[in-house]
View 1 (spheres, rainbow, N blue to C red):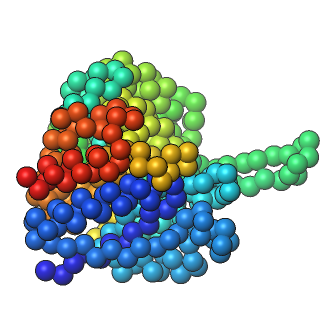
View 2 (tube, helix red, strand yellow):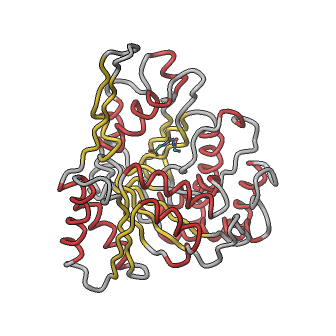
View 3 (cartoon, helix red, strand yellow):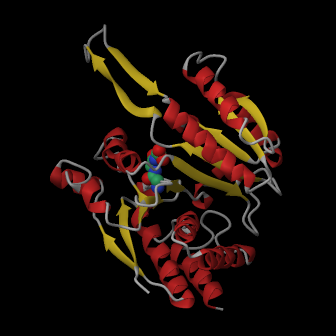
Length: 348
Ligand code: GGG
C-alpha cells in the first residue's frame, strides 16, 4: 500500500517532544494495521523565524499542497518572537490556505482521569470556526506610541463562512446525540452575531431532527462548569471556540488531554492535526510534557486518512494506559513513560 505522505511540523518547545511521541505510536499502529506513514519534517518554528525572518518559506503553502495530511506540534516562543507573529506566520495561514474551516475539538474524560469537576459522562464536541471571524487579521494601528494612538481589529463574518461551519456542526450533531448549541454574544454584538443567529436558524431548517439551543458565550462558560453533561455539539466563532475549548480542556483534566483537528472538507486539500496546547517553553525538552493530546490528535488524523480501525485502536490503547493510572495527572509520568505505556497497550 502507498504510504500516506505526512507533513510534520514539530514547531517549538514541547511541540517537538509530543510530535516525536505521536509518530512512535502512529508508526506502531501502521505496523499493526498494514499501512505506513511517510513523514517529511519541516523545521518551521520561531527558531526558523530568527534565522530566516519568516515562520515558513514564501513557498511553504505550495510545498504542503502535495501531502495527505499535516501534523503540527505547537508554535510559539514568546521570549524571542511575539506570539502574534508566530501565530499569524504559520498556523493561521495554513488553516486559511487549505480551507480548514472546521476546528474539531472533542472534550470528554478519558478512563481514569477525573478532572477538577469530576464531570462524569460529559462528552462535548466543540466545532470552532477556523478561518475568519475575530482572527481574520484585518485591522491596523495609527499614531503608534502617541497619546492619540488607535488600534482597530475587524472581525469578518461571511455568509459562506458562517453557513458552512454551522452546517458542519449539524452534520456532526446528526452522528451524535442530535443536540447543537450555537454560541454567540448577539445581545452585545448586534451585527455579526445577530447575523450568525439568523444563519443558524436558516440552516437548522434542514435538520429538523436536531434540537437547537442558542447561548451567549458568558452563559455557556458558566454552563460548561455547572452542567457540562447537558451539552453535545457546540458551534462557535474562532475566538469564542478558542476560549471555550481551553475551558473544555480544563474540565477534561488539562490541556495535556485536549486534541484537535483542522478539517478541510475538500479532500483534495490537506487537513491539519494538532494538540490544543501551546509550546510550553518552560518544560520543553525535559521529557515531562503530556503527549496524550498529541497522540489523540494523531488518532484523529488516522481516522481522517481512512484508517478508522487503527484510529480506534490508538484511542483504546491510550485509554488502557490512562485506565491504569498512567499520565492522568501532571507530573505523574514522563513523556516517554506515557508513550511506552500506550505502545505496549497497542501492541498487546
Ligand atoms: N498546538 C497548537 C498551538 O501551537 N497553539 C498555539 C495557539 O495559540 N493557537 C491558537 C489557535 O489555535 O488559534
